[in-house]
Length: 244
Image (cartoon, one colour):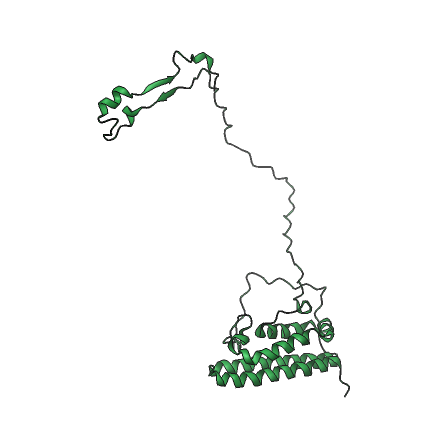
């Protein structure tokens, strides 16, 4: 059997996943990790490996169905009922933080993380992504588990924007007239003529509240500091000030 680039890439992927699982199983036993969590991690890695093997096999056999980039995804109706899951998600008990495998089992994730990072730099990965974009759905979750920033080759392709055109209004024989404004027009305010400003100084006689050293009583404050008219008076005639 001639070893194709995709087959060699699959063998490297399987060896990394196998090495990762062997290290996780040993370290989880040493750290006394929760047993159902360890089983869930193993199931997650097994599903990723099976999906990658199926993808490579269908690609080599020419049976892989590629998405049509010219055909945009149809928008989901707002009134559609959500899908009901008949079986619980197998990965629901796994953490979702970035690099959660390195946080739980740091010794087992060091070498696989480095190996996956070097594997993604190979040109065969770019060829695989060009031939089968579905591989990104397998490699991106593995990078998320190990705390690896996905390279640009694994970037999610932008989806075409689908805009719903509003329905055209029905054609009518009679032209609709704009609504008639029945409100009364606003009347202009009358002009203010002949008004003059008045300035009054309010002294301590009006502001007195309690005895102080200066104004011991209200009568003394009203006598010596009463309210006075500052303007107009004999010094500033009212005619010298313009209208406001």
